[in-house]
Image (tube, rainbow, N blue to C red):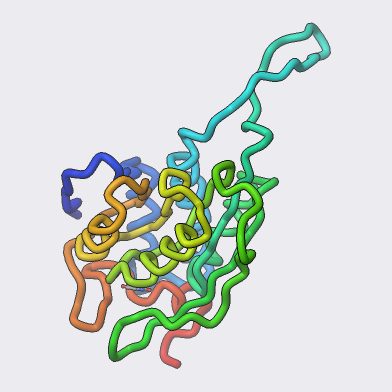
Length: 224
Ligand code: URA
């Protein structure tokens, strides 16, 4: 399907054959919850690979069985935070924490008020203040950027706790142009990695063509 093209260097679309393959699986309404979850897990590797590409490294000395050499590791004084937005964001956090094993996972709980489409907070596992915000990098994990309201609230939370905007990255599977535009209005330089930009939103805030309700499909609660 056609990608909506937006002219924005800070929105990185992970335009990879394996992303397309797995997006097709999760868009299909006949895909079971188990197959849906596994396809998202595969997509998480691809998205995180892209979203972590500019993490800083430092040189260390490593001794192999054959010789001593200089190698690179992630900068040791940088603290990485994974912030999955409940509940759908949970699907990213297992694989993301495998890839970034020293990261802290700070859950954010929000649901969408069906009338106002505004997020309602119910959980926030962030500290009152971060020890070294300048040395903290945050990955906000939310499969769908639809209206952009919950994403924006979550970004505002970290910014209010002094995390520099350039240290915050947003990772999503599918984004709507409307939601991206809303985030961009306030945070033009924030890095967003997504696998696809779809066409638009319905009046009730669902992405078209999208994949339906990500949380319901992940947790097999469709029809509740
Ligand atoms: N959240 C979802 O799970 N799906 C959408 O289409 C929009 C928001």
